[in-house]
Length: 106
Image (cartoon, rainbow, N blue to C red):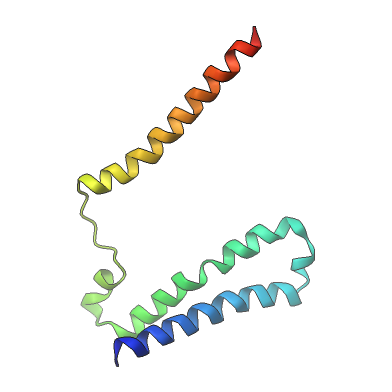
């Protein structure tokens, strides 16, 4: 099967799964509750991941599935940097907030 056909099947599955979750929630009456909007949308975002798993198991050989999903793990400088920068931004944000709040407490 060509890559174009695999891509079309992936996209069709991703949209079908995502919208089935939203339409099912709507017909179940869950969309009327604003508190459930975020969990419904979070569940909708799992559609492409589920579609990727289905397509990987359907189209890839048993030994190539982990590589096809991009799950091979090899940390390098950029990987470590990608994890450290958000942590440093978070710590810096908390520190800036504490420094900004402290004078108003006096």
